[in-house]
Image (cartoon, rainbow, N blue to C red; front, side):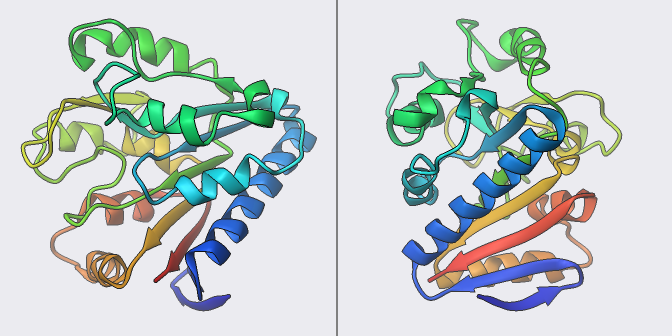
Length: 237
């Protein structure tokens, strides 16, 4: 149910995480179907971590023509795709199964030693996906990072350049393990539907504090301030 708004940013609160997962999966599927009807194909970028697992399991039950959908990740750790901490591994285990095996999945990883070395090839690959993204789902860390746009990263300002034509950036956070590859703020902000998925009282408090802070703009606020499409926040305890 919708419980409040922050300007035109809609906050949707749910009584349970299962209710949230079902509602979010339905909204994602509806937006993808609208895109297919309008443009013949659709694109979806998803985040990793534990929060979206239940939603992934709901989404893969949605009946639609998944062969017309392109799927990628918002970000990933620069790790082998079978590593336990790989977002791609999580997506393959929990999302890219059954009906969704028909979707076109675009990996953010290659065999280069570093994300910097692999960036150009992955960027070229990603440009095959219909742009801007029809649906993009973000999470948020306790430090206000979203995607792999970390406040501590030396690459942050370049990654957050609002007029950047780059889709991807390499990121080396000092407060989290592993080098990363991430969509840039500009690529995220162009999404037609930008959805934030949060769980737990602490995350809600941190999100509201980040959005209300006029002096220190954390990445989650910077992204949502720059977004020019539909913006919804989904939250459950």
